[in-house]
Length: 492
DNA sequence: TGTGGTTTCC
Image 1 (cartoon, rainbow, N blue to C red):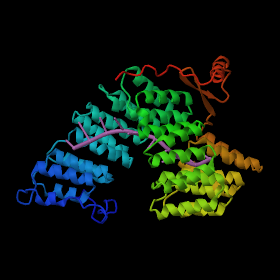
Image 2: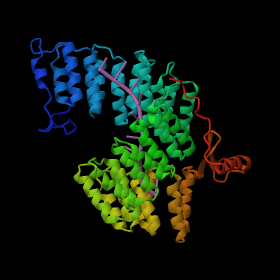
Image 3: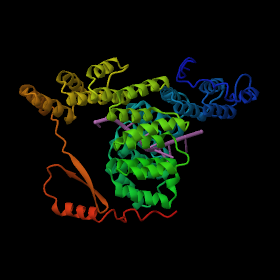
Image 4: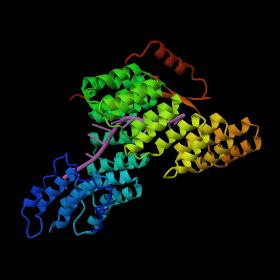
């Protein structure tokens, strides 16, 4: 067996600290073994037991010591690996199972697919899909759901949609998964359409559906639709679910209703880190930077641990407030807390330094990063160059951005405009020509307005939409009337 | 033995 990481692997959960009770190894020691080996049923139960405790080595040891293993033994270990972050091991174990005399069942696939998603390994996911078809398991609802989710998390919303549509039988999880995939891909309007479709055919939504739908509304600033969904969730008492409440904070703060967001935040009795993060981000987004930073500090007083999102929230607030030293302190604090900075954290720091005009320092930070900077980081640097007119550094940032995001029009236009501003017309033209040769189109700006129950996108330069726009205007001046879009909530 | 969820720079 080569599937298990060595004992020194830091990804394996550390042994519990002295303050925690030790895992009840007595059970392990006192079970009856057949010689040195476990009986299948006892072994499977123990395996899952150690998996739940996060004791991967013990789980693996039980697996190895079993004389006879059935498919449940394999599935259990795949699941233990997958849910404890050993994704490659989970995937490798599925392959080993496939090569063994035992046949793969639906649970084997369901257990391995989240690992593919976590590894962003769509190719392997597709391989499993082929395996599912061959084994005749592709029409099993739970398996189909796992495929919708895997494709979505790998960023392939088309494949996710196809998996959803190909299912003969769907359940609420299928709908939640496809709504999640569309949201993940930024296709919020489509996600809301699916949500409505779900209600129309009387599939009962649950708190997971509601929180995804609210999140889509927040990202579209669709306050009216969001409020309607909020009303419905109140009727079904979903608004007491933490995830729903957190999505509501996100919705209202993204729609500029900071006081309403705060009201919801204050009413949550069991706030978790995401509740705090949503509120801190909300303040930051609305420019209430002092409130954002104060809330961040208050969070610690309440005894909650910051996570990586908390630091993104506070660093971006510092960046917008021009608080360079404070931002640096938070960054160091994050390192001291053993949170490894991600691309996003570096992007925030580059933004913080760059906005303040510390261009050399910003460029040095990008250079010293422990991994290759992504488009967010270079984008932050380019943005800072634009503010401070640093054309040389802008060229460097743009070079990387043209490679990383060749189809993104904004970077070409930004660099070209910078050249034009200082009268370097030849170079400005060259950038435009590059853009043309790569067939990059300028995306028209667009805004969304809700007309009746429909969200309508209005594009810049679009022909006169007189009557439709007038309708919107009427809606706006009449206030935010509740429409009847979601009133046909399925009965429980 | 088992599927779905909130919060992320500009």
